[in-house]
Length: 211
Image 1 (cartoon, rainbow, N blue to C red):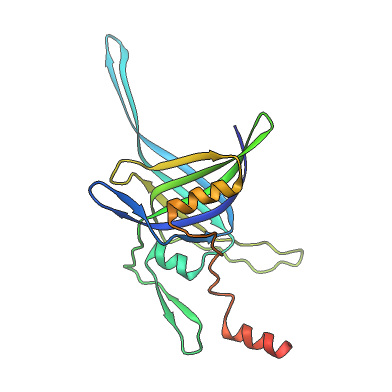
Image 2: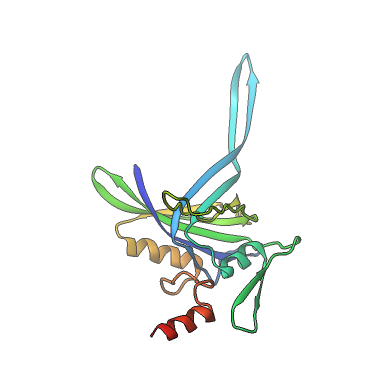
């Protein structure tokens, strides 16, 4: 099955009890650029009679690297535990402390799969992920062109209290894939991506003056 494209990158905080797992108040993280999943296994072989008679390969943990066009303060606050403070002029300031610790979240997205010329939509829901503070890369505009620098953030994929780390499904339409993901993340309708940095009072004032 060939896979192309990537869309609808979402997350939602996870709540675990002894016998149940739920995700609430999900939101869209970013316009999706890339998602890379790597899995680490616990392995053991039992040798007897000069051969391997038993072999076990089990999921231990995974790594998730996400690349999007923008990570809003709302998303960074949830994933990394940073604090958002409202400034007197109405702008938001993100405060990152050394002992900040974000929440465990579920993460989802979908891609287009093609088999025998038929397109379907593969939706993936990672049930429990813990993200770390990302590195950043900034670059001046060169004389020959502009290179976009987009944020990446990496996390560890874990099993939840029920021992589940991933759910996925194939759908005939994008609408069905989104609806399934919305149900996993407790998103009532397709949400817009949070845009904290682009709506500052200065921008609003300049727009008014230009009008």
